[in-house]
Length: 367
Image 1 (cartoon, rainbow, N blue to C red):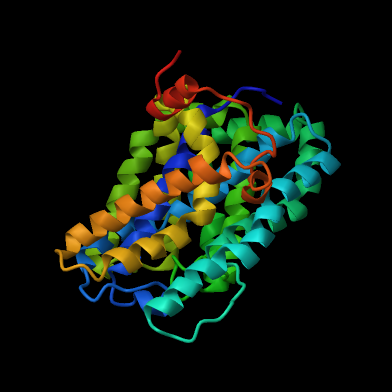
Image 2: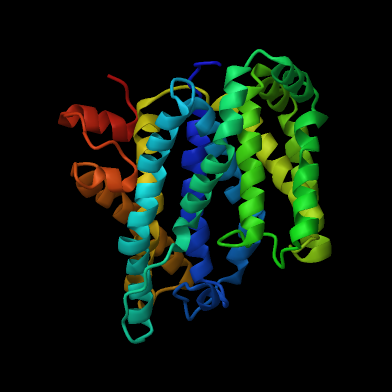
């Protein structure tokens, strides 16, 4: 199995979590925000939702693909027991901690904002994604370790040939089409705590592993054909927007989703597969920021929404407060307190760093 470090995959994870913050902030300015448990702005900005409908068919599946790829790299030097221990530490511990200590915080802010009776409400909330990932690891690790033992076998060679054809990776969309036809989700983008979200995540997680397992052929294909995949995605999104007002049949949305993702993999592989201090810092920060961002977002909404300023400035202000708040909590608290680090998926010991090295991490300069 290859030992190559894939910086483009790290970048895609960071970018996807950054887009998640923007997506969740945009929900605040939609008339239906309260129906999905978000604080709602009295002044809506529905125009924000058109670009969000472009993101929401691929942003969560992309994270599942990337998570499957991460397991491939994790098992290179681990036994199955070591993998389960490592994933329990990295995923299960933050998930359980988040249910009882993180997700209730933004629900408390929601109750306080609407002057509802305050109550402690443990729930998974936005952390449902972690629960899914841990279940996928439990379900698929026997297969993954079997494939690891047969990395030079007939299946691996056939997979490489299959991914060498531009229609090979795209044809896997057939599994996603079958999923939407069988599960029949009311809304394609409703992934959180639904069977649709579970099965589409399971497929993406498995295929993400296989994409990397198949070797260089997949990456050569998506890099060569990236503009074709992206052109197909743009055409499908335009068709969905003009004909279906963004809510196309699930089969078309599954094809659009995978077209975006394959194009993004190719584009990232060509342009982002290089190391750097900025990536090193953001790659470590992304996971804790994902865990805490909803609490910070709701706090920012409580602070900004009552202000008498234009609605677009409210959006920008909440975005700034969320980004800065998450950065400060990560940099000054989570990253530096050894007892907290494991609760947010980080190793318990932090190496001592001087001011110059911290500055280089933040600015992206090299020493």
